[in-house]
Amino acid sequence: MPEPVTSVTFPPAFLWGAATSAYQIEGAVREGGRTPSIWDTFSRTPGRTAGGDTGDIAVDHYHRYREDVALMAELGLNAYRFSVSWPRVQPTGRGPAVQVGLDFYRRLVDELLEHGIRPAITLYHWDLPQELEDAGGWPERDTALRFAEYARIVGEALGDRVEQWITLNEPWCSAFLGYGSGVHAPGRTEPEASLRAAHHLNLAHGLGTSALRSVMPARNTVAVSLNSAVVRAVSSDPADLAAAARIDDLANGVFHGPMLHGTYPQTLLAATSSVTDWSYVRDGDLRAVNQPLDALGLNYYTPTLVSAAGADTTAPRADGHGASAHSPWPGAADVAFHQTPGERTEMGWTVDPTGLHELLMRYTRQAPGLPLYVTENGAAYDDKPDPDGHVHDPDRIAYLHGHLSAVRRALTDGADVRGYYLWSLLDNFEWAYGYGKRFGAVYVDYATQERTPKSSARWYAEAARSGALPPVTGR
Ligand code: IFM
Image (cartoon, rainbow, N blue to C red; front, top):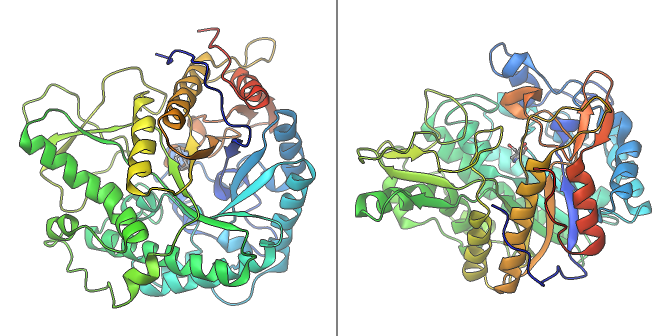
């Protein structure tokens, strides 16, 4: 249900953006000296992605970036969050950069700036160079050191023209879907390795932040984008509350603990002690991870509902992170996941804007004074053009209205939210789901690569233009 419109409008400086990531949109995987990332390898492995889909062509943004920037300008967006492909810039994950790769991003940034759109760079959105995975991947400490070198290279090349920087996107997915449940690249199912990966992603964030700051103008900002979970218990039974606290540690505390407070939660260390001894956390690591941040990025889609494993509940079981015989939650075999009641998107994720408000207020309390950005929020629906070629997506409009209303309510309640990036600008490669799930505000015909703004894109453009939310129509 959309929240009622109030008289509160968004601040004039609010960023109305859209987000994408390199492997999901660029294509051109063999051009300019780019080498395979773990997602190239994973998606080419039979059975790993729906329909065997890969990002080989994706939506061909590498060749069509000018058209895509023009589209953003036409929609009146004033910010664009994209990621740099590590194997396009530093193919082996070590050593000197490839100029052609850096030049692509320089051209993209210049095009954005010419159109008055503020670029925000994410350095790592899951496309680890395959050579680094062959050397052990994120469970290995060296990968964090390699990331810092890569961060310095990109910071040096683009720090003069890009002010907003994000080290990692959703490290939870990299660690626990990549090395735990295996539904993401590299597809490993090793609980101990997933916790090692989490620590080395934290270290990469800290070392990368320092590397960026050592080469960039002081005015630039550095943040991280976390998919912090809004974890709710099915009841106030102490066992269910304990299950929720356990998942909160594994989804949130494992990253924001060291990043914001310089420590892992004691409860996390205790709950995972049968899986790992955490001996890879070396002296000085937590200080290195705990760099002061300029902002925090939050990605939100749906809340997470849990109970104690044996709880007597009728809520259907699902954790929303894809089918696997292996759990992405190390040390939490005694927790059960449930489908939150209510309307769902094409991903099966429940639409619940109250979770976004809760998340923004949580970090307002937990990190007072730290500016917040919603760096991803959006929904997949089964969009299709009508006979006239128009794509009407009133459900997405309602989703955006509900979630932007929640942002606005958080602003009223004192959260310092500076901007919102809709996921996603374009329909694109939705990882293990392939091209079957459409998150774009702009429809892409994958056969012709033709772009058609959906009605939600027009709705969002009007919100960006006016700084207030138009009503939801057409449902
Ligand atoms: O498509 C992804 C994105 O890459 C990371 N956050 C969630 C999105 C939707 O699943």
